[in-house]
Image (cartoon, helix red, strand yellow):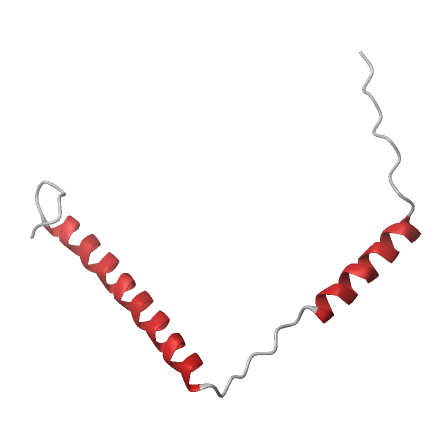
Length: 75
């Protein structure tokens, strides 16, 4: 049984025009964030702290699981 051939796509010229349009839209959609905003720094600090806490809890659980004879974390 012969394979069906995929229909021919758009010519390269059309594709390059579409990519240029998408690039132009991406440039227009750039966000203007004030990096010196104190609230931004507070939010970033909270996010970092919660992630670090998550990371430490995960490491601690892994160590507890290794140390216990039945593989369950002890409390």
